[in-house]
Image 1 (cartoon, helix red, strand yellow):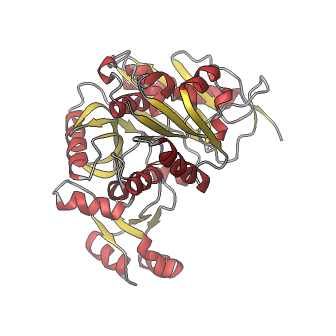
Image 2: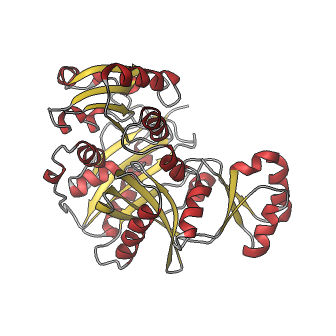
Amino acid sequence: MSRILILNRYRLQSAAFHRWVSAEHDLFLLNCATRAVDRHPEAAAIRARYRDIAEFDDYPTNPAVAETARNWIRRYGIDIIIALSEYDVLRAAELRDEFGLVGQGVASATAYRDKLTMKRLLDQAGLPIVPYRSLEHPGDLERFAADTGYPILVKPRTGTGSRGIRRIENGPAAAAFEKEHGPGIADHLAESFRRHELLHCDGVFVAGRAMFSEVWSWSTTVLDVVAGPVPTMAITLDRDDTRRETVVRLTEETLRVLPTPVVTAFHIEFFDIGGEIVVNEAASRIGGGRIQPTLRRLHGVDLVELTARHQTGSSPASLTPRQAAPAGGFLIAYDHGDVRGMAPAECPVPGISHYETNLPCSSGTASDVASSAYLVSGVALGKDRPQTAERLLAMYQWFLESVALTG
């Protein structure tokens, strides 16, 4: 029997640890208050399954989460920490190192979070990556551009998503960026910019190999999303797309090169630059967007469940992926503040599931969406990539036409 502490920011409807983890283990839950246990239809069963539960406002940044975890580790003799969201990876790693627990420690978590550390490790191992440079002194950006040419990208070393990314077009812009950031320039790195197709691979890695993986192509890049209110789609590659094999191979090589824990979920981004596939960034966690609901619809696989079962030895072999359709994908339109009104509560477009919006619904209720940045999102399955894309775009057009505008 193990005593398992779960740090959870997910909705409990899609993070049913109380059903996934073998009954022989004792469970303890530190939960995001906006995902409160009492909102769940199985609230009584959840409370009966956990030996202790604490819920927190401002969960991502609240120091009481880690302090409560420390108290519980000492009081209950915790053996295992499960932490799968972006906000919990480093917090859990620090706790494991502090108390000598198995699993991902700070060195591993840092290698996945610090883009410069990550790229150095991948570069030293000979994996194909975008040319990059650390930034330490005035003029570093221009010296880098002299080798690679403009434009170049500047990224925060520990940033997430597309936050803080800047495209530098010329020497004056480079000098202005360095003046703006001063000594803080060292918290950034520079990358060569090339037009590309964004690919990513998501799955679960166990003891040196990907136990499950899926490969996707995005319709946009992160810069497209930052620049304007464009919808973005991610759709799985066709089964006969030869890039699948290359991406999965590079995924496993990346995970073996980095200091990866024995069990981890992963989200790895790649650039297809004129037929050459290079590694961009890797994360030892569940990917965002609508990756999870798409995989549940397409394969019947939940990455949170699969990772938790492998971490706790709770019958992971019982989860057998299936192929419900040849292709699956999701569309997300980000909220840039120019659409306001009442949205329909349900989506009638054929082939669409998991429709969500942050606008108030005509029923008078509001969707519980993971990020306030989403204006609308939906998942679709199709006979191929074109049909899947057609359904997702039809949903988006229907949404815009159906919103009863206010103000």
